[in-house]
Length: 373
Ligand SMILES: [Zn+2]
Ligand SMILES: [Zn+2]
Image (tube, rainbow, N blue to C red; front, side, top):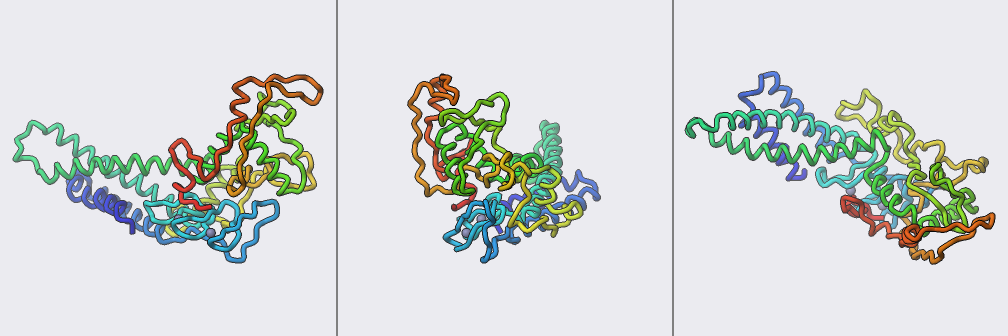
């Protein structure tokens, strides 16, 4: 069991109860607090010991998906799975490798991990209220003679105040990031990272070339309709200078919040069940209808039907070539000359950064999330 988180939980839970708020909480409040603390320990234990799920050895990749072979596990990786460099296995719908639980957070243990986060947030909030109220009492009695104040209680209150505040901020932020994924975007931490990377590269020529090349490899034909969906940028792609914006990127696994909660957390009667698991197999996932490739429907075939990540960013072994756009103007199909502004050329000629080297706004690389591709 990881030492630092366990010490924090025990100190705030038992130290706080014994030294700080045993006098101020009612008997009922004390029983309730200990019940929540026990549920926290149970969900923590399950988040640590439950496997996140790994693919069966005979797993076969679906048609029109990336065929990602894991050299370490000697098997194909299902969609949304990654090889964890710490756990040494391919993890189904890998979210991230979590140092707090010394385990990967993935498809099969996501409900335990979320219950753990929520029990920590709630229990710590109750403790923080008790500690804060005791701190205010100490402050109001600051002019009282020193022999009337218990030094042990005062020290415990000060130390636990900062411990509890630390947990409130760090676990609170992590909970918000996870809930945002579950409710609003449908993305894991790794997929959020990939989305940010794609947004950072969307206007480079190299990115567009990778999409075109990957599309041909996947579907055996040229990508015809590479154009922007967003009306403000709805310019035809001319002379090899495509116009795409981040609004054109559709994340394929998000259909609606309800589907996503069920798939991550299981059905509602399981949410508070400490042993409840997710819905589905973790090997395939429902896709947004706009992102499903249909060989018979030529109208709907644009780059949105490409598997995630759409630029085939996991194929880092491909040498990424710097794209240089050295022209001031390009010819459109109907012969008009279209002036491209200088700053636009600078953006488009910016080279792609390899996926393994790119970092997001928090400075996190893919390796920091635990992934070994
Ligand atoms: Zn693997
Ligand atoms: Zn791991």
